[in-house]
Image (cartoon, rainbow, N blue to C red; front, side, top):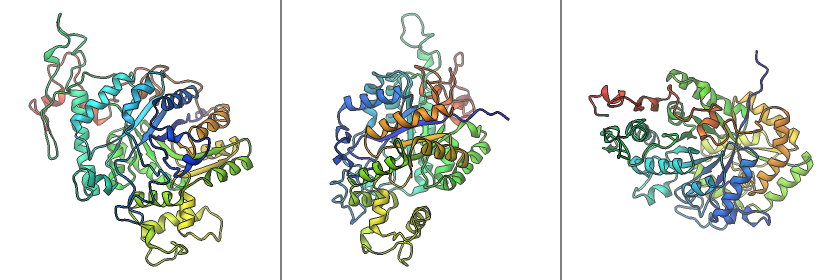
Length: 482
């Protein structure tokens, strides 16, 4: 048996907003969240994280406000604490960050529900070209009714139907990215031509949800298909992830609770003909680290004192769909007959690792969510935190971590100063990128030359290789894709 330790993937989990999973922390004197709309701020963050050899910056995003709490359609609890509101589209800043870095990747969240695949394919091809192949798409189907209402719908499309749409959406983008331009369409163009017109084809996609003739309006980018992230944990979401995702983001209160989802995804991937170990699974965590456990706890308490409870409950309302404003301030949600089962389940999980005698009312829930949201929190010295990360890797079978922040950039500064050296000392985090200056896919997989989708990925069947008159998949459908 090999004694080589698993090398952690480490991402920074951020949002282009004054606050992400830390409502109210913009008031902390050292916090720079209010600079979310300053490109030099993001360039500095990217350079700092690249110097520490983070794999990627993972940008969360939403398309509506958190308006369930004390609702309906009420943003009054959300706005004062800047609870993911206001928020900018992160995709447009990636080329600027890429221009001052060489190797760090950029994961960008984009929805299959509210943007057509032809337009999205163009945007990601553009940014993959301008970043030299360092962009990933975090595929979401969206979850806020407020977003649906602003995209001309009365309410959200039904959950599993959103995933059925997403499956076809991915097929369309694969055809555009992989099957519309032959591999040598530009490099083997006839003399005097920019590209070989016989090497650019329409995709003629006609499906249940989309009709897209093509061709792709962009020439192929370094990765063609951006590296594919996904974060769904429902049954439909896990099936989608096992089919399409190259990396999966899971959130869970404990390693033990995350493990069943990891096992389910890897088992389904194997059933679909994919190497289950080729899918990288990263867990979302908040880490507060300092020289000692005591100093880390003091730091956590100080930061939490700036938190906005109403903003935290607004976030909870958006994530869960339940309005806790309907309940009294002293009611313990574990014991109320009117507590929705999903809320009771979440609260019971939180309570299982909290001090006995804690009353899980609205105040307690808000304080639990103020820093790091509903994900796990690890607070302690470098040794304490590293021990727990290694335990997570073993128990949950995850490949790495998305580190959120209590305050930006200070949380990452502390991780870089205290935790990263300890992880390197233990041999679980690299000293440099596997492929300096390489694509995101090369560095995630650790293999030079692996910029394209692997052959076992379903998108690979759409490859249009040099020398082929049309792609093989099109031959199998009489020249037309369906």
